[in-house]
Length: 232
Image (tube, rainbow, N blue to C red; front, side, top):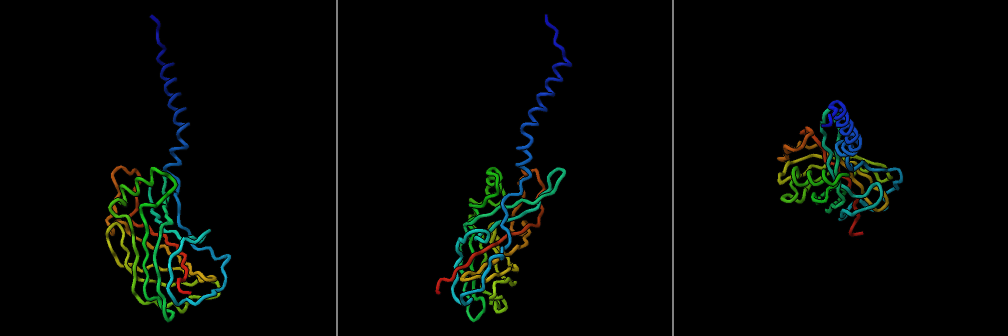
């Protein structure tokens, strides 16, 4: 009977494991460390002076380029040996804004949360089905009827800031919030951006048991809007 060299077998098995890990390691690392798709702040480099009055009825349009309409989330998470941010975004955003006498009269914003994307399909599914439960809560909304003075927003192609109090509804829970928006009037458009801090537990968003990372309670909603006047 042939004698099997046990040390040789053990070394061979170890070598196979090492080679396997080496081949899949980069993929696993990419899956757990990629930052996703974040909604970035406004780019005012090519802004022009405003060519239309700020008063009127405005609607959210898709826009294009670096200032296209986009809304998403960023949450902070801790993986073994590292901390990182993960973001997801969507362009599926609708809404309207009414301004009269240089004062905001009302605004509404609806986000199709079922279209949120990071950059990994499996993570997209987990976020939507296991964290945000978009099958039950397919939209998130922000609404306000608070009167906000907009007379201080520059018309020369530079940005200004304004706090717009309103009601955020996320995961079926509504809470009052006070996001600070960066506002840019450029040509016939008005562009807005805000990083709105949120505590996920305030909206009943829990971390499912299968998620290896520890997701911080504090995160943010990243909001970038392109508005076009409908009554020019």
